[in-house]
Length: 261
Image (cartoon, rainbow, N blue to C red; front, side, top):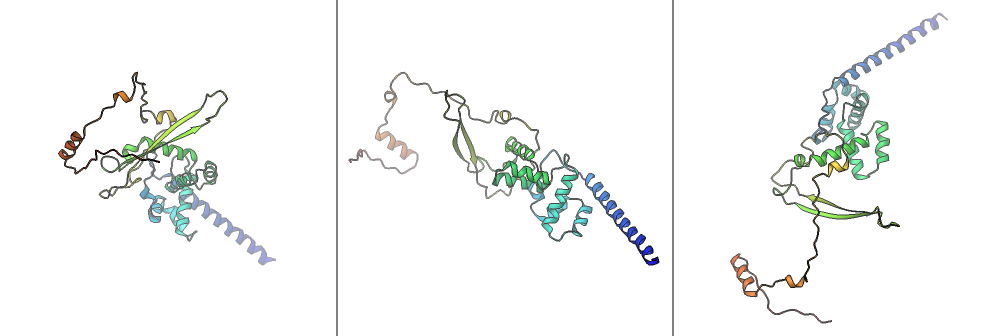
């Protein structure tokens, strides 16, 4: 009975000491996270999470020390580190790894529900932050895009979209046209998209984003006279003279071609 009476208080004391040590460590880590200098005016550049070491350096050293003694896998250390920092400072920090994961999931799957579920669990940024990031990219395209005409070859592609085409009264239909520009990376340039930090601009409406970014609409006026009457043909000698003057070797055939079925 004497042995049991002496052992029980010692075990309780050890548990209490362990709890005090853990609480003290948590307070120290929380203080280190709160003292981090985080840039909320710009989104993290791609080089921050391009490697495991670079992403690990973003988190406080005390948090990294704690995770080094708790988790073995390096990538999981970084993931939990960024998630913990974002959870402690949800409104004053944009964790690079969580932002990159959210943008990648939105690009690959396009599921708002999946992003919101992961965001509530603390493993991803919110869908609202992803929308704000994409709006910032569109408004900062002249600053962050390293390749564009005339420095590099640029090709434009357009496609139309029709929504709610068939209605009873023929109203409230939507016909839109989207145009994108594509430029390959210049071999002389070492800059990639994401090397330049993107400014974290305030949220705005779609109308404000497309303002002065579309193509002006030109009305077509039907001519009063026949279209064929305004066509003019050049003589063969004039075309051949222009081709020789420009230095190109061209041959023209004066014999008309015809096909019979």
